[in-house]
Amino acid sequence: MTFKLPRQVWLFTACYAMMLSGTSMLVLIAGIIGSDIAPNTELATLPIALSIVGVACATVPTSLLMARFGRKKVFLTFAVIAILSALLAAYAIAIQHFYIFCLAALCIGFSTAAVQQYRFAAIELVPSEAIPKTASTILLGGIAAAVIGPELTLLGRDLLSIEYLGSFMLLALVYCGGFALLTQSKDAVVELPEHQEAARRKRTLLTQPNLLVAITAAAIGYGVMSFLMTATPLSMHNHYGHSLADTKWVIQSHVAAMYLPSLISGLLIERLGHFRMMGMGILSYIAVLLVAYSSQDFWSFWVALVLLGVGWNFLFVAGTSLLATTYRANERFKVQAFNDLLVFSTQAIAALSSGWLLAQYQWQGLLLFSFVPIVLISAILLLKMIKQSSASRPQIIKD
Image (tube, rainbow, N blue to C red; front, side, top):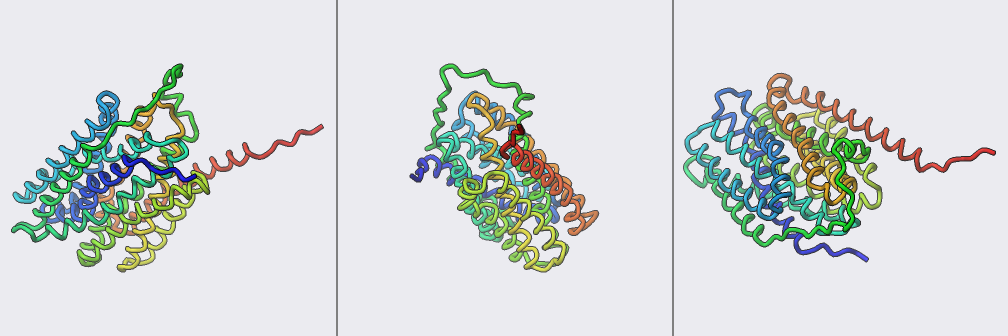
């Protein structure tokens, strides 16, 4: 019998779409705005990098606040931060102040840390067998975010006298809509066993092979994706002369490809298992590097960025659903905080280094650097699958 997802899961999916739209907007134009108003061209990608740093910095405080006050109150608080951040970005553009724009991007990152917790809030609403389907369903909201953010960008680009000022004003309105939806959310009632074992120490938790694989897959998946995605708009538009419309289409396609596979990724995990799903993600990443290195025309960028999105989805959904099997109910906030800290810290480091490395080594240099983490996760996954195969092989007892 097919499990029907609760209404609250769909509500979180809609909120995910609205509250993540600012991220897709920043991906498209933060580097372009930065190149116009930054004091140094090497700082052009700093705003998008700082938005990711904001996510990394806020993950642990967000989880601690949720453990104390509940998810709903924290979600609403961070939604207000998102609204104010969009307005601050609009103000920075109005006065052409680069560092205030960087601050706004950082604060949007803070709010995104709470958005990333929507998947855990939704997982708590369903039985264990429905976790892969629920995790992939929440990410479907990213498809809408892939459309909303860039479309708001173009719709608001010339809406007011200063370019892109109207884009962030429209974003603030969308964030207000997300806040209104979040007021209808409810905290899940997590039933703890009457004689529950004490929460394990972090060291004990981290010795679990499945937990390490889950975190590593999600962290490297996010890191490589962010490393290449951050550099794409600046590389396409400024270095290779592609139009903003073409660049927008590539970024929209990429973000859509990040979330569209969620229509089937939950089912694929049920059929193939977590580790084969991760293997498919790695193969997608290898294809990205081969296509992107071979040519820099529009279609090569488009195919590479679509494959990058698909690979990210397979690694992240598989990692998230595997992670949920490694902790007890009274350990969930600690493990979730640690996971997101490592995942988004990796993403932040990748984004921060992307702009500088792009200026030093150009687009093809970035692709060569990306081979290193892909080889690393391939080796870890291969060892895990070999051990799993050996453990499941029947032992022959000799007389």
